[in-house]
Length: 84
Image 1 (tube, rainbow, N blue to C red):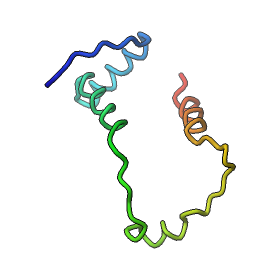
Image 2: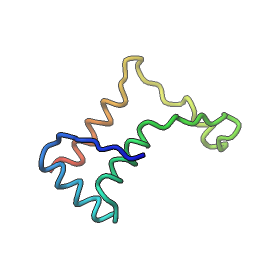
Image 3: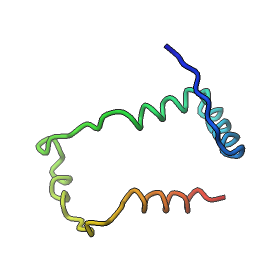
């Protein structure tokens, strides 16, 4: 069952999103729906034995501080990348 959703976004964001959806041959609604599905789907846990030998070898190599917020760093770097 489809339900209507109203979003309030900046005009330039909507224009760019419409342009992107058109380039991908999708409707804006479909694009947003797929994004929400991606955000809310349960994460699949991959058992360690199914990882490739190279991945198993690298697991745990990177050490970071407990307070390290990778989501914040990722958001900052993506915003730098996509700034106009």
